[in-house]
Image 1 (cartoon, rainbow, N blue to C red):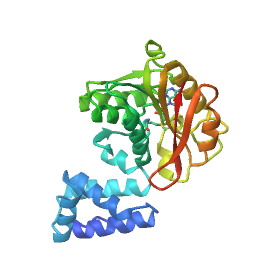
Image 2: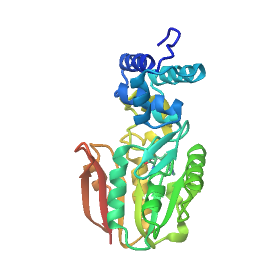
Image 3: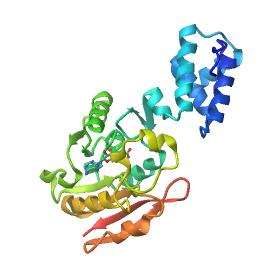
Length: 286
Ligand SMILES: C[S@@+](CC[C@H](N)C(=O)[O-])C[C@H]1O[C@@H](n2cnc3c(N)ncnc32)[C@H](O)[C@@H]1O
């Protein structure tokens, strides 16, 4: 891959897969094909088909592909290179300064959708790209959704996503989750959050996470649960009687998260993600 690139799509793809494999990228073929699709402005299936017939690519396209594959080899997230991330039914613009939404968070949204009454109010604390708030608003046009984000960079991504997707029933506001939405005190049906939850001393395993996700989206104090404590306090202020709290946490944090729920909370339960790891805790208030 470091030599002058071949121009034939099949040779280029083969070289890219080999390069990403050597770089330790978890799914080298998938990423090589998705990057090829991105530079060609087409679908992954069409890119696969083009690679099969071994057509010559225009030189600028081949050069752009080579550049992106080299950056992916340096473990820049695929979503930063393509500029977007799929989340449930929506595509979110993402890049430097915002947390890339993860598939496990789609399960968190599922818990919210199941519990949300007709016309219900939802507050998403620490909305990042807007993944949770905007997907709920997209799937439930009857809901009234508010996303709150403290980081100015992430706020700009989320607000841009809201405008581009045109979801009229969602608002994104800047601010600290501790002071979120005082105008809605005692009237919210669901408080949802995927807060930072990595303990300060822990180094994330994946270089994509360690080097490219914003630290403010990852680290949560000595035990990782400082933001969760603030989320619980805010939920106690915002939720109406019988309202639901739904939070994402680390696989070892189900029991410690339930332990943060004091008087007034009931029906606390921890649920697995798609890989069977504890990932989401839900509870009802009053
Ligand atoms: C793990 S990311 C989750 C982003 C998004 N909700 C998702 O699931 O993809 C946590 C987000 O919370 C934001 N955040 C951290 N502390 C915050 C605070 N005190 N108030 C508001 N947002 C906060 C971070 O900037 C980051 O965008």
